[in-house]
Length: 316
Image 1 (cartoon, rainbow, N blue to C red):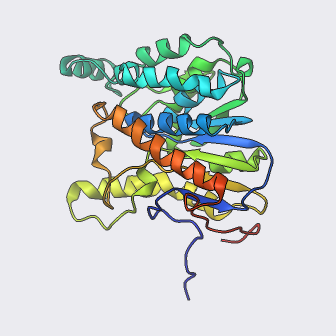
Image 2: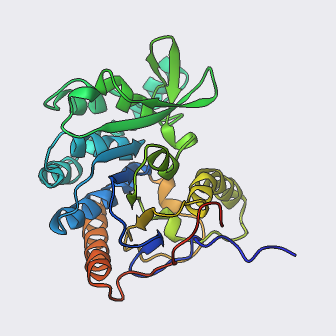
Image 3: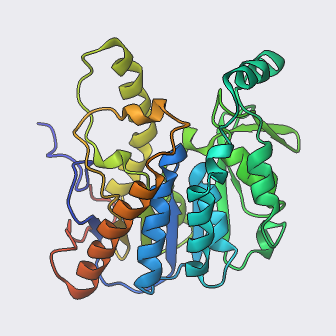
């Protein structure tokens, strides 16, 4: 007989979800997932967290979540990063990373043979941070990338910020692989799309998951040729997060903030429009409103907190 299923799943739950033991004190981690231009959702979530007075002891990021996360970690008060990140997204600095004319993109691909865009715009954005090394940031920060040579996750815990975040955000085919030392790296989403497990390993007792909204859309059996690859990609992207959420130990609380997305079940075709930033303001606003309502409910014990109940270690 098959089990009933994990205590946490990807069905949309208005107001967000909370898993594990509610109300337990301890180290607080912000976990920021990947998702390209959809990463603007995380800015709205950060604004809601700042207004609720929630501050992290640890910031973990993958891909665009590493970019957003390093701005958060650069400030002792993470709320100070919100207007900076809002400007990055609204004024087009994030879109510039995937800019250029069609001719320019074809020329880059012809020259490189591997990618459509240079990582210069992202590099410039990171070089404008107030410090240059991870250990100099105001808050503990780590980001993950996929080692090509070892086919393994690599966590950057110290050293220069720029190559670490560039490596974590090196989307295959769009941006070049990044060399750090003797290794080359691709996007961290290949190995940890939303690294809740890393926060657990580092001893976080309260975890806030910031994501781009894809996990709120349950997948469906593909019916068109182009949907097959997208569904397969989403399964590969989500499975580790699902397993992490099903194995939350006792005494740990995980808040999956809502993105406020209004989309039907199925694959998200917006991932194919990776240069489209026309909805950045909408993404920020929706995620802020949904997350603010969720956090108010979680604080007051009202309907904003859709509890999945406490779980003991090893259950799921």
